[in-house]
Image (cartoon, rainbow, N blue to C red; front, side, top):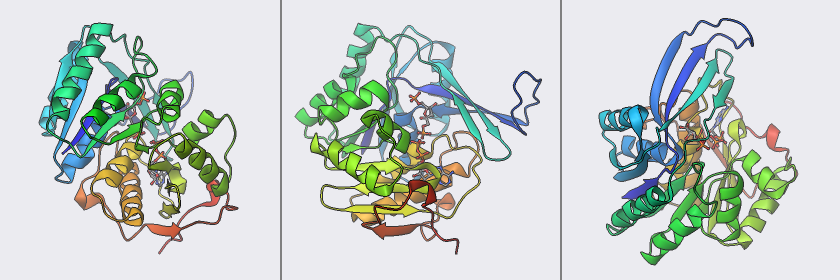
Length: 320
Ligand SMILES: Nc1ncnc2c1ncn2[C@@H]1O[C@H](COP(=O)(O)OP(=O)(O)O)[C@@H](O)[C@H]1O
Ligand SMILES: O=P(O)(O)OC[C@H]1O[C@](O)(COP(=O)(O)O)[C@@H](O)[C@@H]1O
């Protein structure tokens, strides 16, 4: 079983349009609503592939009720912690040329007692001995930056390894404390953490090794359309697909993380699966999360110890 926690979940609303034009009246081709938030999506991806998972999340107001209902429809085992603030809605525009623009709401305040209730709900699930705790997404207002560090201490006290997928100050807090066995930054998040551009594979690997120096067994660094790097203390693998025109990139990172976590196969195979699941998510509308029928493992190229001089933006598999 894989346990996920999403302190700042969302009802993801996607508006599919031909092209964005500021200041104009735009006609929506399709409007979609999906459950959202990083841990929530990891649970959705795992569940789609028959893996047992429980998602813990705060839920509040009408949107919280909608989120719970959407999760119920998808058969996701969820523990909703009732909170006063209304659950946020993140809005995405998805244009016909593949441009995805996300408008992510900060998320209303999680009161101290509510954050404590969320931690208790996670702890109750940790007693069932999950294979991983996945802590994902931004933190709502009022939550201390080291919230994931505290969660990790609780998980580790139960002997459960922790994967963290977040950004900004919570990422910095978790990384510097060595709180995650696995970190999943994307290219921009890693660059922001180190305050420098990381244009080549070597730059990304060097920064990631610095990260692992603070603690952690591995990092999955996703590179958008340029695939992903799996960095372990001694070895590195790159994997990618041939270019895909996205329908919506929302949920790609979460699907990739779920693909990596699914089982304990060899690192290169886990990375192949991560990239296949991420690529599959990109081809699906809104925050639709792929299932087995969407995945093309063969379309993923995996390279051990990739050339450090290669520019990240040139990385892609050769189309078959
Ligand atoms: N435009 C794209 N074309 C092909 N694959 C993509 C594209 N965007 C994302 N992916 C796949 O999804 C994974 C996660 O995407 P990324 O955008 O890096 O994560 P995040 O959503 O966390 O920012 C990538 O490693 C890649 O496998
Ligand atoms: O918590 P944040 O950083 O605002 O991100 C939340 C958003 O990210 C998502 O989890 C998607 O993340 P990825 O695109 O990285 O997979 C959405 O479902 C959600 O709206």
